[in-house]
View 1 (tube, one colour):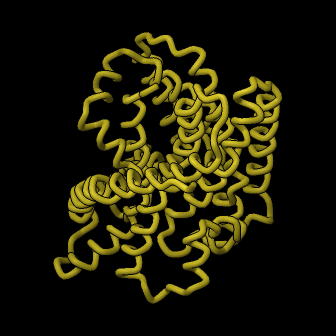
View 2: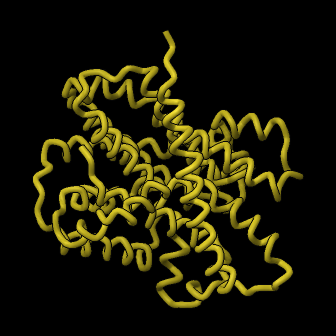
Length: 340
């Protein structure tokens, strides 16, 4: 079941994260309300986690059982080659901070399990550590719950989601939370178990979709929900990062996937769908590409706005090249590997 219109939304979420990591002196951060949105735009990672759970169900829902080796091999082929490329690019300008310990944690996706180490090396890689957990448990969930129609998973997911929201909001407001760049911050924001509810919620959204995928024109509801997302980020002082936005992201994902209106025609355009396919390259390489570009252009003394324009062009071009000449070929090669 192919849903081309949802693919482009990955690119939009990736670009929101890119902007949130850029210099806060940029013009976007000088505009009231707009600045609030981009300061919280890293909530796009939560969208990725929920969408990942949704896509897993859509991709595998016709199977009676998932073969563990084939699944893990395909997931490894999908994300790992560019994950390593992101590290190598990062070391071009930040090699002085490298150690074998950090390299070990990063290459095995263990960094987010250790508060204080989640942001080592190419720091967007913290989320891949979380994805590794999702990929580890999905075949088990599918083979023992989803494929058998076991309804217990629905109650379990709701329970995990509620507990996560209560804990995160209480912890964020407690004396135990010491703020950004501390171990308490990394426990709250990056620890994999804090995000399991997002993947499970995405799974349930996928189960709902594959049984209710009649297509209608949902352009207006989609725009309303997207507006609510923006308004929430601007006006509601809540902790969004560990699944709370599932309340809006899930209906947004389902309606976009079921939509046959003008937005779907726009998002399904081949160039936009292609950008969506390259969105992982955008996300996992955007920090090292920025560092390298700053080194190359530092003699020109560009302001943040000038640097931003050049950065956007370079990032999109390099991400397309990474996708076309590294991600796709390596993925296709690794998928062909057989173990007798």
